[in-house]
Image (cartoon, rainbow, N blue to C red; front, side):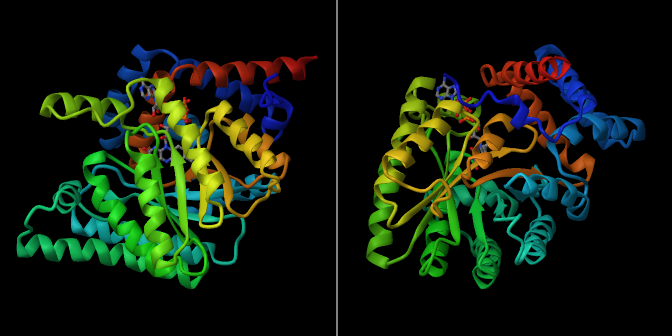
Length: 388
Ligand SMILES: Cc1cc2nc3c(=O)[nH]c(=O)nc-3n(C[C@H](O)[C@H](O)[C@H](O)COP(=O)(O)OP(=O)(O)OC[C@H]3O[C@@H](n4cnc5c(N)ncnc54)[C@H](O)[C@@H]3O)c2cc1C
């Protein structure tokens, strides 16, 4: 019996008109041809300042998947979520820009989020992407042990400084900070940096949280080794546990460059590995905390079952669940309704800057098997229920 199908709870905040609009939007997203065509047209028109496109996007995709154009504007969504017991995680990223000025500006924005959220339990985590603070090629060079030029060394020092400034500020204000995971070829350097930050700031409790992608091979082994180092150096570990978002890119690069595919061979293998990740967390709760970032109902239910089997209270301080704003409300609100720690990633920013994020959401919703169909089915079920 599926437990996440109470649409009355899932959509309690939505008016009929909002639901009909969301239905229409997911229906559009469901068409791959339209989504593909739409993404190119959107990226072009928004970047070339077609004001009416901006307005259309703002009233459709943006409204569904983003909090607002600014932090202040997003507070409406934050408050609405918190009223239902759901935390918000401000997600600020300007994708695809790789210059020092942008890295500094994003770092400043993240620090401003920390200050903005101090003392506000509605914003339990801060998040950033490693490549928002430095070039991906530099992470790769550091990770594979290449000899750096003196200018690259200085550049890397600036990346470390940005990490450190954010983590230090979070430590000072007792705010948890999650570092997103990205492509495998930059992840070794990011892992290394996260571990350094954990060693520095996680002595009393987990402030810095790294992300583990279970669609990768070798990640359980990494967690075991990280745990051993954490025990030796006496710090706590925080992990966001996800499946992983870059599968096609990873497989294509591995094939092109002729190295072993770093991704699990099948969806089933990724799912099994994710379950092993859940077990790893449950077996080491003395040291490890986890945020399960997933839209998968089976995984979410499995975490709940394991918590119960281990006699853990629903609001256990080591365990969080998270979904993206505008998706899988049936999971999020079920969890918060039952008292679990639940949160949403809440992207925000000027419409033109979040268009890459929005088009990715649209494409992912089409490619992740069943996601759009699931959202549509739930919305339809709720509209039908309200008609009765
Ligand atoms: C709050 C939150 C934070 C996130 N943060 C990150 C992050 O920092 N880094 C990141 O990379 N992703 C992140 N993601 C995205 C996440 O990794 C998944 O891409 C997305 O959530 C879909 O996976 P799922 O567990 O929700 O559900 P499902 O729909 O059950 O799983 C889909 C996923 O399974 C895997 N998969 C699908 N087909 C195959 C196959 N043939 N072989 C092997 N594996 C396969 C892929 O990872 C795919 O994305 C985040 C997601 C959420 C909700």
